[in-house]
Length: 104
Ligand code: SF4
Ligand code: F3S
Image 1 (cartoon, rainbow, N blue to C red):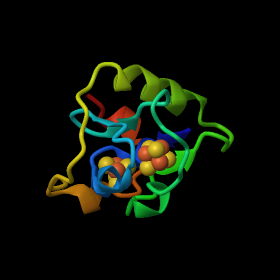
Image 2 (image 1 turned 90 degrees about the vertical axis):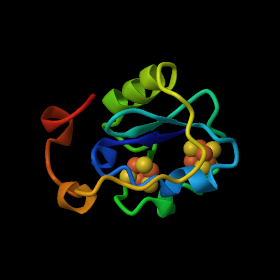
Image 3 (image 1 turned 30 degrees about the vertical axis):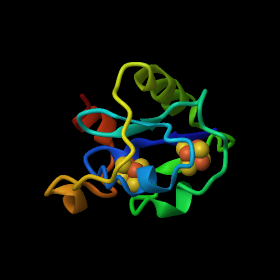
Image 4 (image 1 turned 135 degrees about the vertical axis):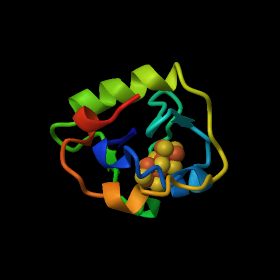
């Protein structure tokens, strides 16, 4: 499965949802997550993210993000259409410790 990671926070470009063939993205206040039970591992979303926030779960060190995606996919609503990113998305792109600075 693929996983949405830290750099989605406050960037939330939503280009990813347009290409997912199984509509398995879910949306919270500050980021999106992928439902690991629905993702078919096609990989088409990964290059679509301008923030490079989508990773295959085979990459090392993603355990926390895998758990976060699985948890919030069950709590947040589905999103299938692109939405306007936050006005300050570019300013947040690449910032370190986004999870600690802003999540929820
Ligand atoms: Fe959707 Fe494919 Fe990305 Fe999984 S890898 S979230 S199925 S676009
Ligand atoms: Fe987030 Fe990238 Fe999608 S910033 S909303 S994972 S296009």
